[in-house]
Length: 304
Image 1 (tube, rainbow, N blue to C red):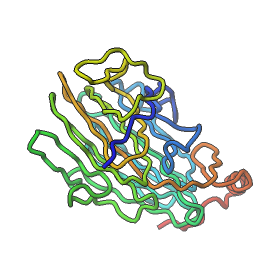
Image 2 (tube, rainbow, N blue to C red):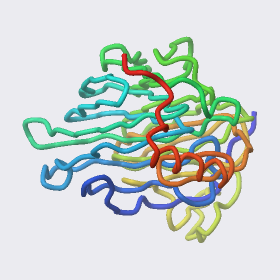
Image 3 (cartoon, one colour):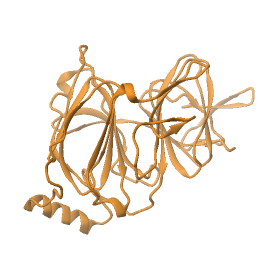
Image 4 (cartoon, one colour):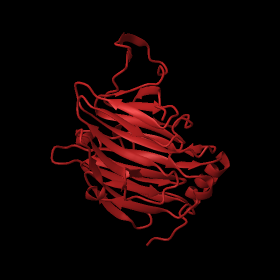
């Protein structure tokens, strides 16, 4: 077994999307090679309804899959095919946009005004760019949880973890998406398929993701009992950790607990051309999609 070293760390950056939703962009709209098959991730946690209530009015999607994971509050959604629904706390929606839909998402806070969640975009391979759109809406109660003897809790949002299989299936990237909570003073080794790109996103507390080598751009601060301690040895709230190759990661907490997403998927290694939520393999395909939006032929499926 080989431990994946930390390739790089970065902090999610504040931005606005939709009709004025304040959120933090974890990654996206740049070089996709490090996160392939994942294109973008947003952290839309906010406790002020004025900063998210305007939501994400009608907008197009083509060529991608979107994964929405709600922690608090709810998201009402509707699309041009007649689908409607509401995602509550702990629930997941995997939307395959495929050949194209028009979609809207309107967040609502809980009684404390909290709207917490994440949206991840996964690319579709060229052979599936124009597949039929579909939804998989999963209630929070249907997401399996494992409780380890060390006090850790692992929610299997997508994929397989020690025999527990997430309820979403038929996904092109064959991803694993885990929501992991670890108490203080805990060390855990987590296997990951060596042929997948993988990253962690810390959104509560802090942890050390042990390195087999020095992480990129992080200076060595000191050495204690043979252990190298880096200036950013503790990965805290809104930190993206990109891993290098290997088949396991090691996570360690000290004075405080941590909660993070651990996500991996099979790289597509295909050209990426995008125009907002339309992601294809070439600019010619993007221009075709824009023409279809203008002439009313973008939607290939009938309302049902």
